[in-house]
Length: 153
Image (cartoon, rainbow, N blue to C red):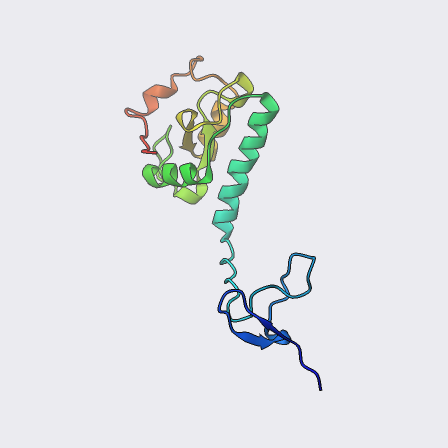
């Protein structure tokens, strides 16, 4: 019986062809590395991590729709949540980081940016209550919090 062999590009050992990974780039059936040298799959994302990424991505798409600057990242949102300690920026209620929403101080619909300096973590109730209003409107939102949340980037 004829057996085919191949040399692994990672470990340099000649092995039977069936010892190679089949995650090739489409041009070849077998990859250049063997099964033992195959890079590990990344751990699956938690539901919380998926929601974080979805919310940041969704707000980026909204910013593009309005034609405003959008540089806000998942890492910045995670850091902002950590700094907030799970507390709403407006009412100061401690509800936990998993329940805070991305709140644009100047709404995207009012040409506010999707950048770190225009975003605060807020509970759903405060975010909904403020809606599309500009912070300089009839309600003094700044009076609800003495100091702004500071994030070091």
